[in-house]
Length: 102
Image (spheres, rainbow, N blue to C red):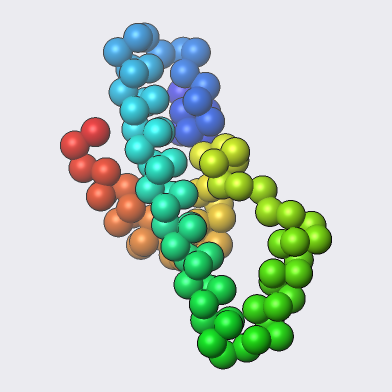
């Protein structure tokens, strides 16, 4: 089984116990990723507002004109890719480790 298949909820090759474990992990990592990405976006907007009002206005204009797809609707693999673009692999490992006893 490919890790990316698991992250995209393809659990067809797993037994029921494995499926429940993977689904629980996937849900937990999605929640952590969404929380971290939302916090990152908020911090970026606040920094732009404080230091570069034009960049802040451009970002808001882009959101209002083109929209912004919510993280909640994105596949886990996409969330991971966005997270790694904004942060580094070490922070991703820390995020996974913070899931602890799942």
